Length: 94
Image (cartoon, rainbow, N blue to C red):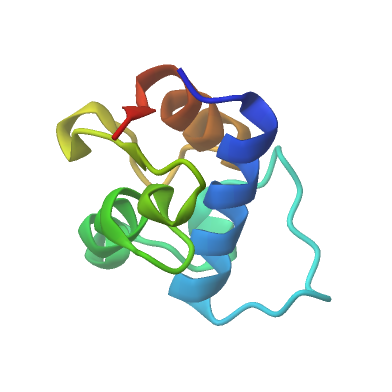
């Protein structure tokens, strides 16, 4: 299991990477993915970014973490908090 704060950091970084939102663009825990620009057509890429991106995804952490993409079972209606919670619960040390 991953610390919730780190899971939120990974989630936010991957949202910013996926959507092009900058550091100054506010992202709230209750925002849903669709409102932030992640719709159904971008969902698989977003989930893969969380699981596999060596810059901002779980493998970028020290120590690195892994997650089965199939455990990221959310859609564009999920909130940022929903996503980070799933990441925290399902990530394991590499």
